[in-house]
Amino acid sequence: MGYYDDHAQNHNAKKRKNWVFPTFVGFIIGVLLVFLTLPTLSNANLLPYDLTEGNEQETQGDGNDQSGVTQSVNVDIQTQVTDIVDQVSNAVVGVVSIGGSEFWLEQGNESGTGSGVIYKVDGEHAYVVSNHHVVQGASELEVSLANGERIPAELLGSDLYNDLAVLRIDASKVDNAIELGHSENLKVGEPVLAIGNPLGLQFSGSVTQGIISGKERVVPQDFNGDGVPDWNAEVIQTDAAINPGNSGGALINMKGQLIGINSMKIAQAAVEGIGFSIPIDTAKPILEDIEDDGKITRPYMGVTPRSLSEVPSYYWTYELRLPNEVKGGAVLEGVEPMSPADQAGLKELDVIVQLDEKEITNVMDLRKHLYQEKEPGEKMSVTYYRDGEKQTTTMTLSAQDF
Image (cartoon, rainbow, N blue to C red):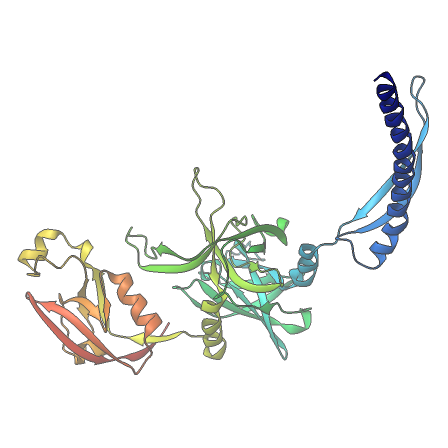
């Protein structure tokens, strides 16, 4: 029995001696292999970064410290993000809005700055997309290129409803235009970059990173400041930081393609990381229209509509004589003579409740169907109430330039 115990102890000791030495040797070999193969892997671009060894610096310790040699290593990080920024940063510019004509302000009065994106080069001209609210009211416009040079810009046209504007500049000053992508197939959670000029040109070319937080978000827009929404903007939501001055800048996917024009953010103390961008698929046909003749051509009814909710409910019954089941619609405040609506028989105080097969509950519904679903020259069915009686008529839409 005692022999068995002694034998077990001796056996274990031998086993420990047998594996300790090979393990130590294997560890040393592994370390040497890592150090020897790192340069080869780096040169073959198989690492997610590049290593550049710097110069050795000697450091001398004081009385109690031991002197030694430390090695300073400069790490050159090259990733997909840095490659994209290098690729597209020259296409993102500053847009300077100049207003005022006072005698002593010979250089003009810079009333605001925003961002823009060079999206097309055609012959001697290059085209820049920005926001309508960036260029609105400007007497002159300038574009600040990525290298800091400022050149004159011509405003070809802008669109209030989609907050887009097109500027034209001298192509000889332009290095490259950004590639246009598609926004239709974006996925929530997909990584994106925002590039622009937050808070002015002193922070030009700022890059922020985030994800697609939501698609087809609807944001009400009040153009005349009366507190009543005039339009619903359908936008991309992102958590990439968008600040004043970023307006008109680029929202870019991981292929370096332009997928959105940054437009707005929710600026409230309790809100963090909610920014919005105009989808490039929405912007493309508008940019083409503006390039052609500086105008946006949309179908035209010839009416001045107001949402039924703006009318006190007392008048719903005693003035408009609407049935109780009617809870929304667009009331015609006016009808222009000889317009498509006039020729279709519509009159003041008619309440439109349906266009074609689309239910209309307010002015935004009416404009959305008219501007996004119809074309000039098309026929449109209109269902409305007059003096409590439900009627239907058909009109042929004409064209109106915006």
